Amino acid sequence: MIDDETIRTDSETIEDIRIITNNTGKSNLRQKSEELKRFVVAGKLPDGKMSHEERQERAHGNLRWLLQYLLSRRLNALSLHPIYVDIIRELNYSLGSRHRVSVIGLTLMQAGGIFKKCMLIDEDEFHGQTKVAHGTGSVIKKYLQDLGTFLGSLTLAQNEPIRSCYLNLKQILFEGAAVKNSRLAVAFVCRILKESVHSQVFTPHNPWVKSLLGLLREVYDIQHSVQDVQVTMEIETLVRGLGLLRVHDIQPIGLLNDIYHNVPKILQERQHLLAMKRMIMPPNGADVQ
Image 1 (cartoon, one colour):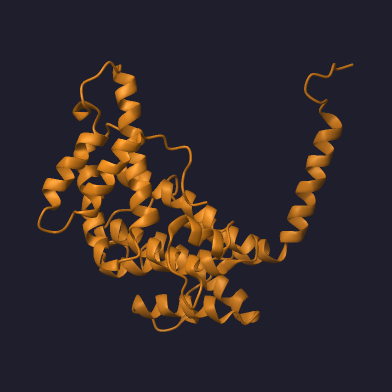
Image 2 (cartoon, rainbow, N blue to C red):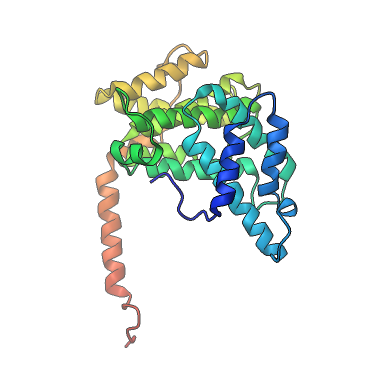
């Protein structure tokens, strides 16, 4: 499920945030952003008997719900992406360090959680969650492409780094290879990187971008050998979009190949270690002789 059931917000607040967000456009962006701050800034919450800590917790929950709503329900229209990017960046600037992490950092963390859930559900389950109409291809892949484009517009296109503590793109590619399902991982990561074409910092020669491209080169070689055209075309499209000539001009970094081919061995060793641990460690509540 791409909804986050750990987010707790009252139904009235949910409806207010939904109405404000759905009626935000270029002409009233500043006004609507100020209206949203009434729900996500602790000092602007309605007066009540809540303690300072309770107000902070309520504001943080409201912010998480807003971000989850934008990420899971509002990204199918690409024309609205610039508006939602501006909303998040405005909240990020206004709130500063009032929340545990930056608003952009929290957005990336929640997007990472959504991606992991998308790796575990099927098309029908996804459709039931999002109400997105079934298309001719994978609805989940199309959604993750839109999500990747949005995150890239929010960060790289604005010269904003994607810190691995919030969203680890290399880890996503590793996990995609580990379960031998690179299609979703590659589609997601490539769409994020594609937005770096608008950056003056995150060019193909940037060390962080260069290492990700090197990892994608390894994915390309593996998937080309098994003739997965969807993955190889996604990477080729990214490479051309960044102004590079060929995928084979990118230097692989030598990390993925061993992981991909040794997955069965790694899993077998992990199972062996767990079995050994169960033999050594007594069950909970048992006396140690």
